[in-house]
Image 1: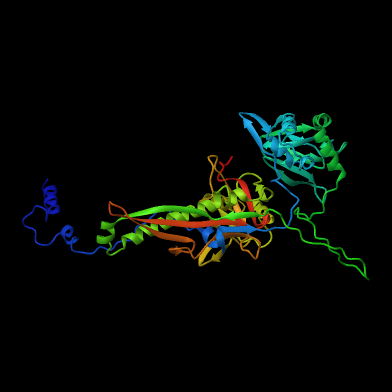
Image 2: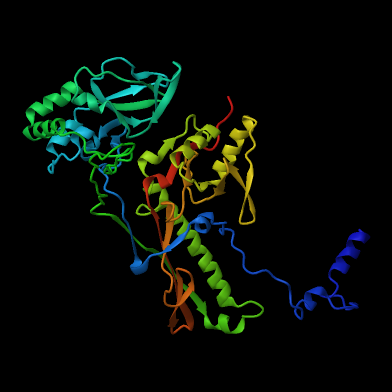
Length: 477
């Protein structure tokens, strides 16, 4: 008991004990200048996307992407809607079928009737949807699930020729070609729902509609316009000839309505009371610190928009032909190689959610593979095939623990992905970011308008590839 009492007395020295012999630390701090940090903010990230994108000046606030004329329209996939378990083809999207491309049906009477003729079917994993060598008498639209196209390889073994996911379709030529056969086997990888349109149902509607019949006849009569593997208007050339043959004449045709990207904006009004700005600026300037953290938040929002914005965000604007699903769910080395194959011309950077990078590392460890690191601006970054894998927490993770991984080529000279901004703004504080004084109100509060202007452009479709349906973790069986 005596020991406890002694400790209590000693702990209160300086507050109540008249026998205090020296200045207490609590009072001494009133005359001392403490060493302190600037205000910290946990939401600040490395923002690799903003650092790796080459930023191009968009004079006038608009950037136009001119491309060669392409005969391919739409996204190449047919949208499917559902009410509960009942699925239905979205009628206007049926023009993605080659035989219906360019079909004018403003009232959607024919297309709606055609959409109503699709039959819904369900398949379990491993079930055969279409079998090699059998008659192809229907077009099949994948409503939901994953399907492998399996065929014979060069040496006679079975190999996966490709993977079909939601919106993909097969058998479209069977609508206009009788006695055609499947040139591959389509097998469900996951529980799969399809919508099938038999050729007889399509032919019945052709016989009933004069407009559709005329369109199909025109489609069969006119051969496909000359185009390269990317759907661009062909440039006719001659090579390997002798003598003086007639050389082909040609020209490079352009898109008549190229896409234009307008600069987007992220803004906020920063408010600082004059009393704070006047009296509490030592040792740190309060206005500068408030502004610093506000700009950090704006830059975080900027990167989020560059990834997710529906108008110009990279995930939403990646070409659907540049999107590939994972083979088994988790991101494996095979999946990453497949992704690199979609952006094989000078691939620059891979961006993934930190948890997706961890999942890829786990898959590599299972195989005894240890990806090398590369030096990027003084940072040691994990890589795959020499391509840095950069963390980006703006790439969303769904409730089902799936995400996406992006691979991009960057720069105007490389026909890659670029960032857009405009410098030389009034009251510019950083490139593409301005801080404008808005005045002092009657409550003595100073207001500053902080604005960041930005956008992004994908110059050609194969500048960006996306690995979809990436699972972040799976319990070992």
